[in-house]
Length: 113
Image (cartoon, rainbow, N blue to C red; front, side):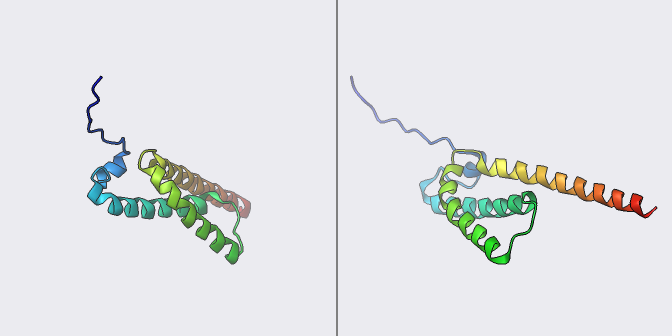
């Protein structure tokens, strides 16, 4: 049995492909961009999804831990749809917040009458 080398490209998410992660020369750029996008989306989802405000030092600690944890998650974002999922979560939570605000304004207007 003869084994031959087959050029197999890794399966990447569309965002990773768009950033050029399939090219080894662009890996650092793609990793950096995915890390930045992941951190932005994580902070947005955290702020939209967390019900109550934290003390300043606790908030800073959460952000630091998110930055550290996202280093490892970024490697998974090359092949798993993590960024796409965070984007969908941000949209859903944003719509929820808008509806909640609208509902509270209607209740406030009804209470004034």
